[in-house]
Length: 96
Image (spheres, rainbow, N blue to C red):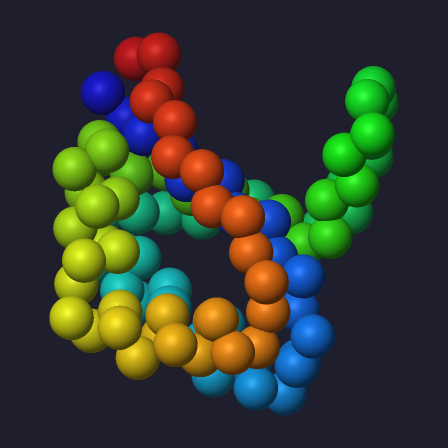
């Protein structure tokens, strides 16, 4: 069953975040992930959530998402993300 990773970012160091942005796609692909949404304009239809930068990924399953986060290669990138932005990250199963 496909699983989706929803990431909302508030980048406060754009120059520092650039390295993360350039390097993370390869690691996403390594674990079978693909970008569905990467930034772009958002429109709040209902409610009060005002997403800053929204990214949505599709992975083969939740296990693949965990493998991505647990990959030793991601540790350095995660440190960059934590230093350059604040984020909320949610995994959710699809309906295939």
